Every structure is written in structure tokens, then in C-alpha cells.
Length: 420
Image (cartoon, rainbow, N blue to C red; front, top):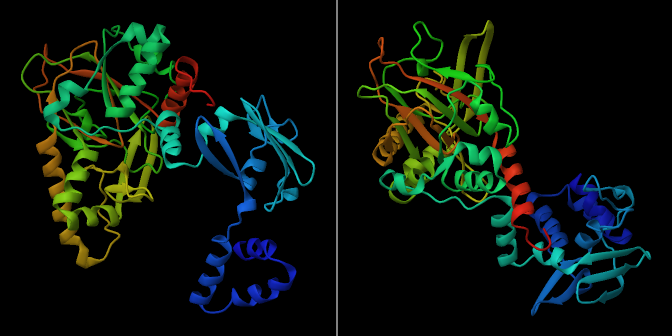
């Protein structure tokens, strides 16, 4: 496909030469490919002046984002231009700018109009791109040490979230920023979680059901359903599309010692390791681990396997997902035999640091602990389960896609930015 794109962009007299060069040695190919993609022409851009700044936009991008009814379906908010007739070398015929818009007539006589605020919000300057990312795409994550937990873990009222868009926005904004929030004054009901989740989107179902009960259960299929110490972990790392957010509604809390929650911000831990233990950090970002869960739940057999490192990075090197669970780490090691012991040492260090940086606290009946399941490790101290001293939580998952979607809708409604 790349070959065909390049050939279409060059003149007919040069196509044969490039066609042959593409099948030559790699270095020669790379030269020709880069020479095509690095080629720029001042006629390929439109420059506008707005709010005292000069903004440049590529012709091809502007034409692709024409907002007229022939190119863009207004109610569906979707591009409908015919790609088979799209010209990447489109050129300007006329440009007319007034106080609020820019109107362009192209060399094929098609006319496009753009709002200046709309263009500014999507401009190619680094500061505008950063503003777009932080305003609309995703809030900036703020990392924390367990010592600061009481400062960063905001409290939100259940009824206000259910009835007020501002409260809903503030809850989701804090969750996206810090990865953890606490909802208080929740009704003592098995369906109270539903009222919160319906304000966001919908529950993510897993093989453990639509919702799940966390309490001491003999002969359980999951070690979380015991009263013994529960090591810190993320839930369901064996899912390729892992549940993004965990919501735990405390219905009954043990009155004896124990039963405290443990939470650690793995983004903080990862940054610490990258600076102070770079080799171990590198192993945890590059070594695949096989995560697994095998059993029967609600009469349904399951055999889940997924391979991914403990610390997953995006193409910019930022942490995008954490996988960690001692019970759900499979026995098959998909790496080389030489890396096994060094990986175990790095893995142990990661856990030790998260233990060191963790917050410890105890929820009470009526609290919903909401936290980022692919950012934080969570666990629980052991407690004694007996008559008159039980602990019962009701849990559910929600995907980040739904949370970010609702947050963007609320931002556009409550705090609109011109051009959004």
C-alpha cells in the first residue's frame, strides 16, 4: 500500500524509477521514502492571522475537514467526502477571511468555510495541540505518594452525583486526574451502584457477572473472596481490554481490626523506578508476561490468557496500563531463560516499592471506592470473618471509554471552549 501511495504522489516520469528503487536495498528505499514525505511547498499551506497569532494549516487537512453538507454530515458528526476522488495535492484558488470565518475556494471550485475559533482549537502549534489534549482528550494525570492520599482523594456525595451535572463532572474529573475518589452517603441497596453507573454509561460485564460480591466464601474460585490478606494487584489483567475502573460499594464493614484497603499509584512507582532503577524498569516494560484465569463461575467455564508486560508504555514512553497480580500470573514464561531471574528481581522490586508508597485506609458502610484499575494496585489486609463481624462489598466495572466520553459531553455542556 505504501508503494502505491508514493507512486500516486509522483509525476509519471519518476514513477518507474521509484517503483524500481522500492525493491532495492533498504537504505536506498529509506532515502526515497523520506525524500517524498519530507518534501514541502509553501503553496501546500494556508496562513491565517487570528488573535494576534499566525497559524498555518495544510491544504490537504483543510480540504479533508471541509464542513459543508457535501463533505460532512452535520447530525451524524461524520465526514462523508468520497476518498476515491480526494486529491492530496489540492491547491487554493481564493482565500477570504473576516472576523469570524475563513472561506476557501479550491482549484476544483469547491468552497469550504471554517470558523476561526474552530481552527484555533485544532491548530498545529505545540501550545494549541497541548491545550486540545488536556482540555478535550484526557485530563492530565497527577501522580501521588500514599502519604498524600488524604489530600488527593476527594469526597463526593452520592445524591449530588445522581442529580447534578456539575457534581458528576467534578467526580469524573477528579477520578481521571488522580485515579481514585470516594463517593459517600450511598443508600444501603444492591442497586445503588446502578444509579451512579447509569449517569456515566453502562457496566462492563465479565465472566464474574454484571456485578460481583466481595465477601468471605469457602471453596471460592477467586482468592479475593477470602478473609485472608489480599496482595495488591489489578483486577483481570488477563483481559486484553481490561476493565478500566473498579467501583466497590461497602455494604458492611468489619468492626474488628483488619480489612483496610491498600492503594498505590503505579504511575508514581514507575517514574521512581525509571529514575532510580532504570534496568529493572526496562525489564518490566519490555518482558511479556502471560496472565491467566481458569475456572468456573455461574456454571460458565473460562480459560483466559493474555500476554503483556507489567508496565505498558505508549509510543511516547508514557505509562498507559499496569498489569500485576500474583494469583493471575500464569506459569508459562514467554521470554528467554536468561531473563527469568532478572525479571523476578525487577518484579519483586516493583511490588516492594508499591507497598512502600501505598495508602492504607478503611471504608465504611455507604462508601463507594472508585479507582483506576489499570493505574493503581489495590489490596486488602486480612480480617477475622465470624458471626457478627462480616465484611461485604458489591463491585462493578466501568470502561474508561465511557467515562471519558461522559466527561467530554459534560465539558462541552458546562464549560464550553470556543471551537470545541
